[in-house]
Image: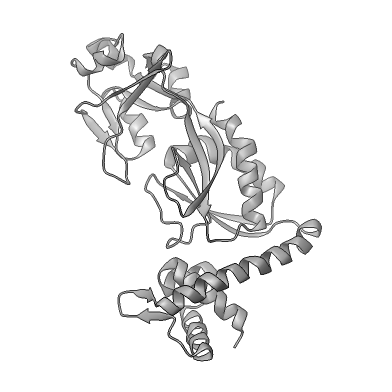
Length: 301
């Protein structure tokens, strides 16, 4: 038995939650992963995983073994990296997850620069506004807006984005231009962005002279995908509040008009997030460093 390989296989099953995802992330056959874990259990003389037809759960002994071996694997990778970084370029596979509009308007336009710098890194980009589970989905890093709430994740600040409130000229001609935030409650139709994580509509936020306020009112339309949210505003369905980079071209073309500019809310923070218990590889480190260098420019172009 290759004990080190078996430990890696077992650790990835714990992180991924099942053998299939672990096998995919390690580019191994499912049967190989299963055999390695069985050999490891036989070697240790303890049951590390409980298997049923529907799920895999970690035994108390398995959890203890995972926590101890995860530290050993991290130390080994640190040792390897300290010798290899100085004389080799980062290489390998990165799985990155990012929201729809952030992908199309910010990350993808900037990505040729990263791939030119690091041609030996291969990227799989997951694009959607749904929240992913970094562990079970075997994702190396997600790009998220807002404050980090999960204590099991590590976040690195990579920039801030301006927020704008806007509507189409046709909508404003029909319903009028709001002069102040409270006026949104009086006959205006709001297009809410609905969080995929909570299913709740995000409130419209405003700030002026350091005073913050929120408008929580019945929305006319709710949409849970950022590009479609902007498209609804362009179609004249109502007033939207979103990131400035999402609406930049539509504002320049006159398809959208910013309103309540004097009440723009605080800038929205963005982070690169990765699991606390997963070692920061050389390729992921250079990607996150590149994001911190590049994103502030592209968020505010």
